[in-house]
Structures are given as structure tokens and as C-alpha cells.
Image (cartoon, rainbow, N blue to C red; front, side, top):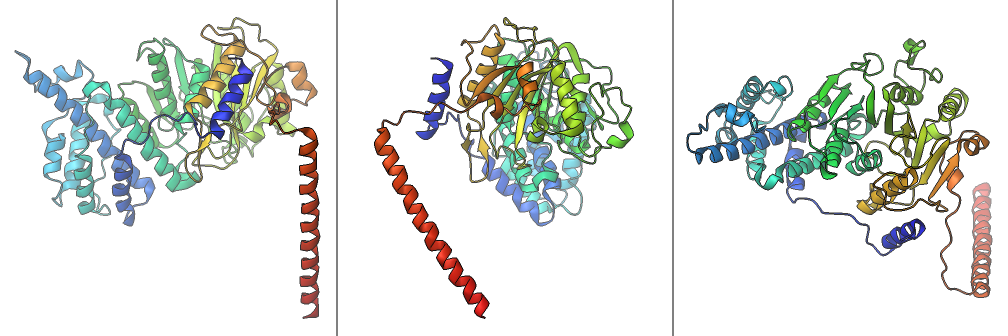
Length: 526
């Protein structure tokens, strides 16, 4: 199928109601959310997400431990209480006082909060990877112990072990459901850490990370970029765990959530707490891949104290907006053949003044590989229209076509489907269409199609073309209008119909104006 036909087929499927969405809720996420929601009476969502997610984490590692313990009980000469038997197969050791059956037996007791805190402390003690990560504030007075006990009983009905190697995906989906609900409930301030999985999948599918590489996210939130990168590598023939992960996160509670999220999947990483602009914990890191959803349009990023920073190779970003500070931060951390993919506000593609000058220099340095305009309503945390930027230090790397002095523009604003009344999602077909188009243009080894410009969807523009548009990077300027589909209505009949409809609208307009004049005269008479 030609690329243009693929685009039209995808859009036709949306009109016919087949959006390519896979799967559905597992069934118990909504129940868990309702149970957690009962805690709203005396906790705000910023607090109770740690209560709930900490319990889910504890249930998972306890179930995985129990499965391993039962297996050891059937092995001649094996000791089910030998900690090394668990660590050797990447299962966390859970001491007796922290096992789920022990805690659930105490769920109705007023001391359940302290028992949970003691359990978390014991797990951290016996598993150095988790030290300082787990929540330990279940005993505080503000937390309703009766409702906490009900939540423990509910979570206790859900199996989260390692049977059939499905549990990590199940738990990941529980985490995602909860994180999305928390982000939606808290709004922009509370939900900045959450990037919808379908957006992360698109970023990762386009960058296509490989094993033995370094992946960096300087505002890593709950770790979604890392988890999806590991999944991508694993499903494309690579080996899990054979990447070096580096992340920095300003909010320490969110950093801990990231570390728990990685731990349940057996992923190790270097995750630091700090402000990546002012306390860069990886100053000397040159990454093969930078993936990020930074807090764009931030006006309080402290730019006034960074006017002479070494990272500003293309110009000093304005104090009132961090966007081109982030972009240059990403470039600074790229290896000589590195690539970056990140979310950015649409204003970054067309801003004038100082930001426009910086963008021009970045384009002239041949760093801009691809720009994707995204549909609206994708994020729980902002209604600001967003786009994806892809930067490449060396456009020849991994490509079989000469892409130097050329940039791909993709207008994906018409893709996606409404998942609910207020939020849109990209389907599997949408993600595949956009990423396949990018890889075909690059001439990648695994590209399945030859690239061709598609009016209204994609266009490969030269740097000179971009310069003629004033270095504005909005895809709509380059992709042109979509080819009109033939509706088989004869031209003469269509014109008569349209002219008749226009005449009707003129009449309706005249009637409305007359009514408005009468109403205004009435006001004047009063």
C-alpha cells in the first residue's frame, strides 16, 4: 500500500469507528480507584496516590516472593527462607513481618498504619536497591485506618505475582491507570509528572532505541520513557537490562515513584533528585537518546542566574520562558551520533524575537530532524497545543538516505480518537503510521515503505525551504492541503446545493439582525 493510501485508509477507519485501539481496562483498576477515592475525606490526592501506589508495590513484591517461595519448597535441598535464593533470580526478599498475608491479617487493627511503616522499613533494610524509596507514613493520624484496612482487603483480592510473565505488564497498567487518574484529578500542578503512555510510545517508536546505549531524561517523572524504551528494545530482539538509564527529577516523591516503577520491572537506573538546569547531576553525560516531556512555557525556571551558561550554544534563552533552555539542554547532553525526542509547546515552532533567533541557529546547524504536530486534548495536565521535536547530531547515522540539510514535517493533528469526553488518545494505527513515515524518510534498515510526501500529512523540506518561511517550523506550512476525496457528487449539482444553502443562511442572518435591532430599540425605550 502506498503511503498516501495508508493515510487515507487510517482516516477512513476513524470515520467507520475502527480506531485501532487495543485492549481495555483490566477490570479492577476502576474499583481500586473508587476505593482510593474514599480517602479523599482527609487526604488530598497528592498524598493518597503514595498511599495507594505504595500498597500496590508491596502487594506485587509479596506475591512474587510467595511464588518463588512455593517453588523452592518443591526443590530438594532448597531453603525457602534463604534470601540469596530470591536475589539470584531478581525477586525482592520480603521478610516475614512485611509479607502480605501477615499485614492483611492485621488490616482491621488500629495499629495497621504502624505495621505498614515497619514493613516498608524492613523491605528497604533487606533490599538495598529500595533504600530510601518506599513510603513510610501510613501511621500518621490523618490517615483513616478503617478505610486503609478496607483498601488492603481490596488489594488483597488481586493477584500480582510473576505467573506466566504477565504480572509486570498488569502492574504497569495498574500504575498507568492510577497515574492518569491522579493527574486528571490534580490538574496541572499535581500531574506534571505524567505523560500519557500513547505519547511516550510514539516518541520511543520514532527514536527506536537499541541495547548497549545510554538513555537520558532530565525531567523523568514516573519513569515512563525508560519503561517504554526497555519494552521497545525487548520486543525488537534486544536484551532487557542492556541499556544505561539516567534520570533526574525535581520532585523527590515523584523520583521515588519512578524508582518503584522501574523496580517492579527489574530495571535498574541512575535516578537522581534535583533541578536539571541548576544542579545537573549528569553534567558530563553524553547520551545516545534523550527523551523528555519538560515543564514547557515555564516562567520561573531561574534563567536570570544562568545567563553565562555553557549550554547556550545557540543563544541565551529568555528569562520568561524555559523552552529554548530545555532544547539546548537536550542538545548539550547528546553524544556525537545521539538523537533526542521531546514534547514541546506549539509556540516553540513559531516564536519570534530571541527565541526565533535561537531556533534559526539550531535549524542552520542541521539539528532539526523531524517536527510532528499533535492533536489537541492528549494531556491530562494542560490544554496547551503541543508538538514533538526530534533532533539529530548526525543525520547520516543509521540512515541509508542523505537527510542532511533536510527536515521532515508531519501534521498529525487529525489523528487520534476521543477516549472520553475530554481526552484524546493516539491509537496503535496512528502511532504506526507516524513512526513508519519517519523511518521510511530516514531510510532506516527496518523501514517497510518507500517515503513519499503526502499532501496534508507529511513533507520533507530543505533548510532553504525553512529559511524562506522565516524558520517557522509549523508542519502546516509545509505539508499543504490534504487531497480532497471524490464524493461522486456531480459538480453542477454540488454548486446548486451549496448556493441554495448559502441563500438560506443569508435569510437566517437577516432575520437575526432584525430581531437584534428590535431588542436594542426596546432597551433604548426603557
